[in-house]
Image 1: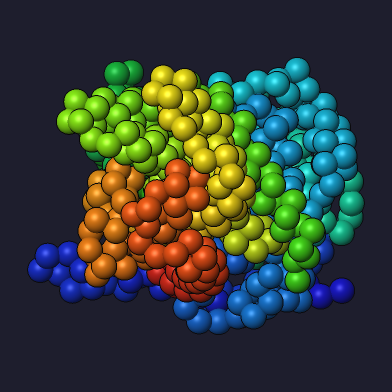
Image 2: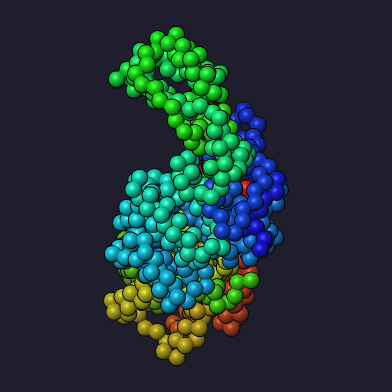
Length: 335
Length: 269
Ligand SMILES: Nc1ncnc2c1ncn2[C@@H]1O[C@H](COP(=O)(O)OP(=O)(O)O)[C@@H](O)[C@H]1O
Ligand SMILES: [Mg+2]
């Protein structure tokens, strides 16, 4: 069986239209990406907003031409065999508001099923089974324009599941969902995968915990490039020697941000609670011995330690090591 | 390859949305039925006040019926892909293993059926209120011409929809610009033969102009026809084929440009 997804030197450049004074700019949203994803894998593409995740998905879904490089889905070239690729795939993105407000959930799903050659009988039987399975049976007759975000996203997921794609693309499927609905959605994704071992999902997310919990393998993407690609466990194991600490300090008043500039500490999170005068810093050190130095530098800034703890390495810490900044920082700087 | 059956299935689902949704939204019912009906009645009254010949009233009713279809083509076809893009449906259609033409076809057939229900209202209003009389003998021919004009008109709609695939909100402005002059040129309210040959020939590129002219000659016994009915019917058929082919061509072209320029979808992130 060919790989479910394979890309070689895949690159997409956007030409931003020239602004007054400035020349037309080129922007590499996806930069020389090589990926190989096998049938049966739940593969995660993890990166901050603006990393190029959606662009990569759109290329693989035949909605966007690559600028250079090649990509195949189920062994079919996404440009030359684009019509046959479409028979193999479906895509759902988070926060999508597709559909027609005046139709009910059941009617809308039927309409979308008709784009995939399902007979009405087959379509409705799948739809009814899935509405039941994903807890929407009671809302089957609710109009789309009355749906909550959670209901809408469940409907969107059913839209993707029901056509039985070989490769399903999920672009930030839990974006904007309440924690418990996001958890449900992850359950649905796992259930759908478990029904057939040859199904493949490429999922994007900027939630580290989601990638760690859900995915068989993860690629970390930053500024259009794949920086690392492995199982979450292996990515973490590769950094197991690192020492991750969390310290809560008082007395830093306004100096907290300076900790980010500390060359030996890779700060992955910094929560300053100004009202309480407390700052919590999570950081990675090369080894335990470096802790003394780090603490004395904090003390030099006026910080007094309230709490200190040592932690297991998570994907979040790995991301900071690889990208040189945390997801939150990367998103701030891309705005 | 996507089979014919699958494409027809997609087209009928897309048509179904039109018919169902159009009758669930009261403001559309108002916009698409009441407004053309009022305009039509207004013109009838103006013509009466001016002492125009009685058959002009029948022209106006006919024009009113056709206006409903023209508005539907403009607002329901030409600008449609923009709305689909805005709502996030365009991705879904473009990614599906079907011909995009089946989506356009579905929009056209659905729009036509939905509007047909509205135009019956205008027709009944005309017959009941203004006692418009038709030539019973010519009705079958008139209906045939009507179907031909609809095919050509919605073919034009499919072409406009493809053309506007790359447009953003600007599409709406263009639709507004197209709306009014067409009334004048199309013979909604007077025979195009009155425009003189050259202008009438230009107006004939717009399928409703020929359609209305031929229906007048058949169903209303008008003797101010532009060309013989047979010629007009042939021209309508040619226009229908031409628009359909152009629509297909344009759609493929615009889709490829959109995929190249990253404009198939509106929201990036
Ligand atoms: N159609 C487009 N035209 C121009 N720039 C785009 C377009 N789509 C995305 N971009 C830019 O490309 C970069 C990557 O975007 P995207 O692929 O949406 O990232 P992600 O999904 O990881 O947030 C962003 O900087 C975005 O502004
Ligand atoms: Mg995105």
